[in-house]
Length: 152
Image 1 (cartoon, rainbow, N blue to C red):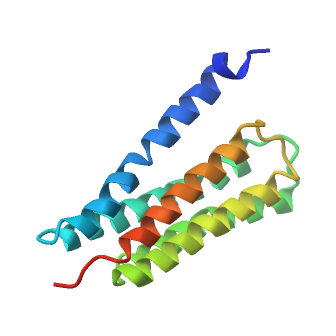
Image 2 (cartoon, rainbow, N blue to C red):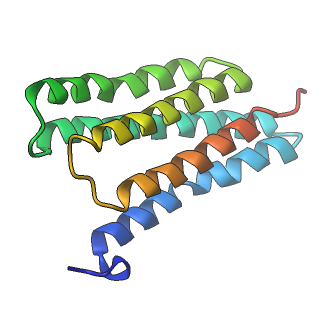
């Protein structure tokens, strides 16, 4: 078995996951500090958040289609849930920053909690849930921070 530092899947997931945080980490402060373009950066932040929330929803579609040992009812619930994050993300794009942040953070946290619940029924790699928790935390904090974009 590969050690954690030599596991190519774990390493790729970490690089891609943490790399995916870069727009959150850049756009949240940009929306607060650039008084001339704050709303543009804010729109970009919430647009990116909506895309990423839709992406993580698709994970459950993949689990439903390929995870061994899941019962049919659990597979159907995974399929149904997999589209819910997109249905949460889309209306967030129509809201002011505070509302968008609240809706997207709700979606990210709900998805993480459902991942934890699903972990009772299937074997995730040991690194998956800790990585998801870190990614969810940074994305959510960035979205909350971005909600304070100055008016005007």
